[in-house]
Image 1 (tube, rainbow, N blue to C red):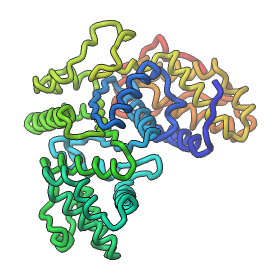
Image 2: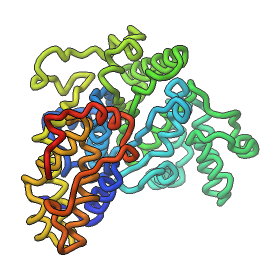
Image 3: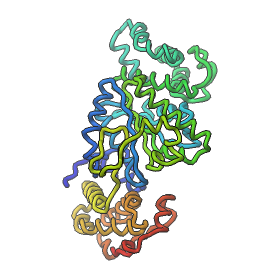
Image 4: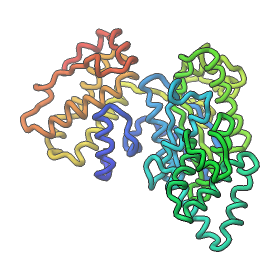
Length: 427
């Protein structure tokens, strides 16, 4: 495979894999096994660009690539001009039953093709510039027309936007910053700033719906046709108290219903979770109306899964696809390496396959758990050393070691069940 990446994309990809994390961009060159989803995802993105709204649930076991898939979709969304936001659902930091915290994280993680997180303030300023460019001298009337629908449901958002425009135009920097923070859902904005806009209190769960609607309006008027919002790791809901879990599941149902009801034109909402979350007694099945909305037939062969369905099943990795991914990473690394010829010689296709088998064997033979550790070892232990040291030969000088301290809980549990049939593979 011939890999063409810019130096910046290469650096972002390699640095992330070296840390053991999913890269934030450049995922198109790493996408293994996702071709089956391309047509459906692109069609749904086109729907969003055209003013529609889409909801999608993505299921997969640990290591199947849920976060990778979500960021791969985000890259395709940004290519169409959409803004994106990724929110990790957490019992303490971002509880789903408190949508005001979710909205706050949306504003904090908001990014566009031009601006990294947080792009919230640049988007606000682009919105103001677009209004003034469209109708010089008539900004007030244009502003009122654009905010008419938002004013009906969330007048406080519209009032704060008007005040933000005035503060920006009059050079009141501190007031403008405070109002931008309040519009982003941040707590503890000074009462004097809120009084200047005629708004009270802080954002609550129900107000978050209106603020999200307002954000979509601002994005659309500033040149971004919509927002891809990813709620990652919703399976954490299974570990919270029963009352909190039921509130969170109901909040998710409300959000899906609002998307289906047309309240959020330009929103592509994606949630990710494990099969246990979607099928188990502690997850979606606890709320029958939500279970009905997400019901998808997975009884047929995975080859015939419908990529247009409300719920997608990620196939996960096999040793073959893990090896293919490793070869792509090697080729990307070699593009900017000091010694690309030595990398081609010492890190052959067969060696990459051997490493995949060895790492998988060290993790109980569970291929689905192996990708993160495998890629981290490949980049940090093998490719870097081959590139840095003339006399380093991984066949001779490297012995795979996997310490418990570098593993996640899921990886550590898999390691305790290691399969002897693969574990003894020698590099």
